[in-house]
Image 1 (cartoon, rainbow, N blue to C red):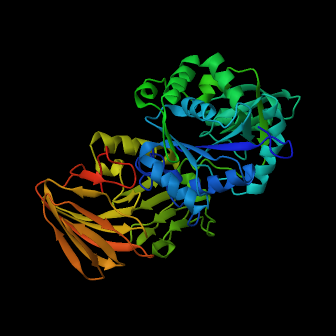
Image 2 (spheres, rainbow, N blue to C red):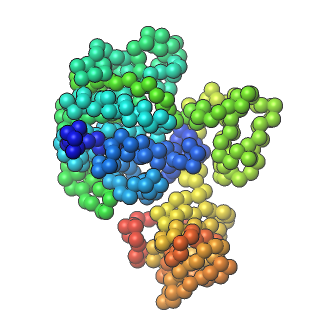
Image 3 (spheres, helix red, strand yellow):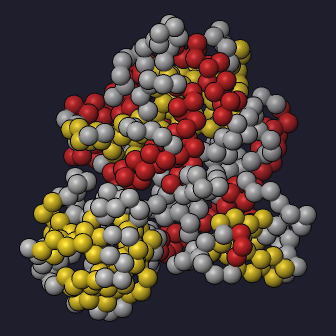
Length: 486
């Protein structure tokens, strides 16, 4: 699919899946790392979308393949970087990258559209270098190759897979000799010294029809499931929803195992710029300039304090002072509802912590105290056996669903902004310091008619305070059949 100048147009596809385990407790299953503002006040997804637009230029379609539960987080990230509309393909279940790429190829604007496949959670600070690398590989992709980008390694990493380059390819880049799984330290050092191995970044460039042909040849069952799910898909605004029953039955496999390690038209292009998959707290720490003692901090830096410490990283976002006294080679991650203290040598094992908490049915393994919603967010300030106190922030122009609860009453107090409240058959405007009471079983709705965020304190009281005690009558976000908050 060529642009006006005859140069193939690139259509970026952002893979937004993620389990939220490697950067716990800052990331959770309900709020994975790509949505967290890790680089200043910007999230990795926002930076990835901006980088994708720089590659594609105006007019190209940006597509995100994401989980249904994260669709409004993706929309918020798109809005934050000025993207008015991003096509979202909503996976009914996580089925790894082979299925995600199959869905994107089937939804491509044309068979010859060149798709740039990018994970949502990578950090590539030099956008110009990335754009140049992709443009340099465009000829090979348009000629039918499956292009992968290899990062020129800077140290013998045991956390990344590797690609061994083969002979130079006709359209540029190199053929691929083999893919290598994450190696032990001695093998990684040996590969680094040979000079022909790259880190496997999981970034790809290929035509939609090339992806479909490769999947048909090497993973026909995955392609068949995705094709059937897309044939039964329904569109909901910017959301494209593959059929859930069909897609859930699809086999889960990575694109590397399913296709790239088997296909004979794979070409690797080196990328010389800085890159990180931000796959551990060590990687996050390394993004921060160290002090003379090797100490680093992020989050609320005013609350992070190093005393007689060295090589210690503090991420402070729990709202309290965090002091590292006499520590060395330590990670301290403080959030409002969970604290992680770890030796930096064990940063890759954080997912074991999450698994342990899940086995104990701890809510902190999956959710933050602060929970994002399409209308804004809420923070559970206090919870007891028969009460819960929340702080709600509603975006300008947004509203919660028209709803009722069977098992609880609610008191709303406006802290700042202006609230429009439906309470039974009454509609009222509440100003700062005004309040209302919602009886059990009463239809009600909260909206923000103003131009500034609305903040209220909500006090719930009753025998059952679960988030599934909601009956919706109207909803602006298409959630009439969903269970969950507001």
